[in-house]
Length: 368
Image 1 (cartoon, rainbow, N blue to C red):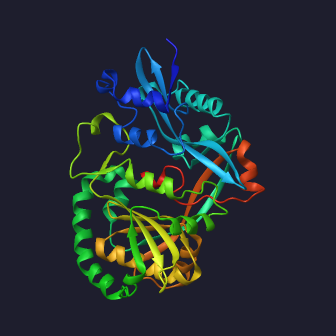
Image 2 (spheres, helix red, strand yellow):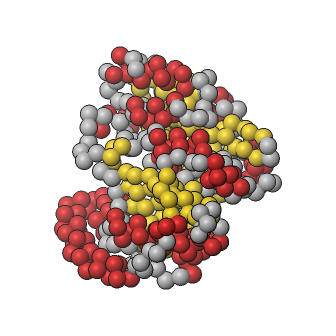
Image 3 (tube, rainbow, N blue to C red):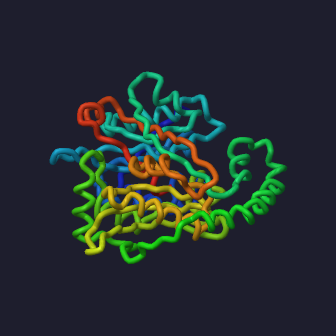
C-alpha cells in the first residue's frame, strides 16, 4: 500500500487527543501538554492545519507538527506556519515520507513557511531546490562549569562506557571551579530595579511593541502569557508512560521560564528578558534593552549562573552578544555561535526588502 497523509486542524487535534484511538496508539505524534498548548495558541484558528500523520497499513509511520505564527509589519498581519518537530519511522525511510509531509504543508499553507535550522540528516530535504532561503543569527555560547560528560555524550556516542568516569571528573573539577566562579561573579546590586512577572501589564506591553519594530513576529502580552501558561516540557524527576512512545521532549529534570522586567529608579520600564533554564543550560530568548540596562542585564545573567550552577549560556541578543564579547566574564570559556533560520521564497520580501530579523526564541525554540 502507498503512504497517505492525514491532516488535523486545531479543532480536530483537540478531538483527537481525547479519543480512545489516541490513548492506545503505539507511538504518539504529540504529547497532550504540547497539543493543549497549540490549541490555546492565541494566533491559531480552529481551521488551521497543524498536524500531519503519514499512514501505511493503518499505522503511523511519520508525523509533522506546525506552529501557527503571524508576521506583523506596517499594520498588516500575515499568518504563517513554523515547522516544528518531524519524525519518520526508521524502518520506513527511503519512501519519501518526510517530503510528502513537507509538500502537504506547503500546499495547505500556500508556501508561507518558516523554521529554525534542521538537523544535518534532513537539511538537504529543505535546501536542495533553493525553495527556502537561509539567514544566520550570530550569537555567543559561554561555558561556566565543566561538563565534558555532556559534550562527549552528544559528539562521541561510542564512548558511552566512559561517561561515568568523565562525570566524576566533572564533579571534581567543579568543586574548585565553583569557588572561582563565586569569587569572580560581581555582586548584583540592582534587586530593587528588577521584577519577575508572569503577566504583561500595559506599560510593559507598550515597551515590548516599541522595541519590536524589526521583529517579524512581535510577540507581546497575549503570546508571552500563553508561553508561560502552556509549556511543552514539564519538570519531573523521572520519565513517565509517554517516554517510550514519544520521540520528542515532554519531560525534563529541570525546565523553567522567567519573564523579567528591568526598571530605572522611577520604576519606568527600561528592559525585558525571557530566560529559559533547562538542565544546567541557560538560554536568553526575547530580550529588549535600553542601552543603560545592557550591563545590568549581563550582571543578572551572571547571578542566574551562579545561583543555579548552570553549565552553559547561549545568547543571540545583539546588545548582549556585543557586551560579552567586549568584556571579561566570570566564565571559563566563550565562543561564537550561529543559528540558522529558513523562510520560503514567498516570504523573502520581509527579510530582504524590509530587513526584519529573527530572534532567539522565535517559533518553537522557547518551548523546547
